[in-house]
Amino acid sequence: MAATRATPYQSVLRAGVSGTEIPDELATEDTRHLLCRNCARTFPRADMSDEATPPFTRILIATDGSPAGNDAVSLGVALARLAVAPVVLLHAAMPWRGGAWLARFVAAADASVDPGCVALAEACLDRARVVAMNAGVRFETRLAYDPHPDRAIVQAVRDTGCDLVVMGYHKGHVARRVGAHAGVPLLTCHERTA
Image (cartoon, rainbow, N blue to C red; front, side):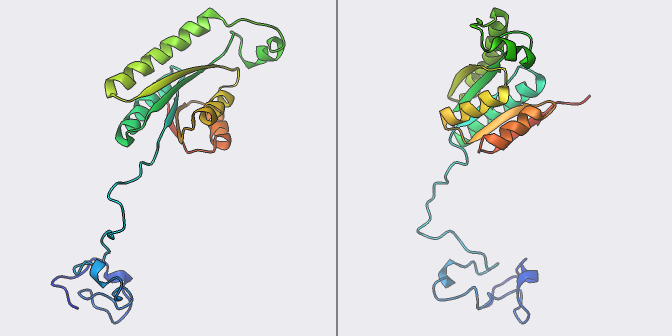
């Protein structure tokens, strides 16, 4: 069967088939009614659903208040808006000042959470809440206290059933560990360079 114009797929046709006809291997009795006569592409079949499955059903956005973390919030919320998916906004805070090296000494002690760390974490989550509310995206916030942020992010993925993690990328060690252990895709936002 000849078409009225040439196909753009001439390079994939076997020898002896002109660009204006549908190759026999594509035009069987079962598929003949599905083929476009102009380019030999298949149309969606009648048994295919018109509704596409969303790529992500729940997105975890991990932020630390840095510029890269704020970019991750903006990107994650934009993706959630396109996918019509809720987000989980997570900030993994140090329970006390001093870093991970102090965690080894304080872990066994009954240490209370530093109020300064709580205030910084809440301010970071407040900024993320504003972005999500302005975009009209459903969200929940979580504040995790762990000296190892990668461990807190992976645990939040497991607890919430998120199927994508969006986070900032600084030196990369946290993002590498999350990517290795989360079991879901990881989208990182790198720091901007001047």
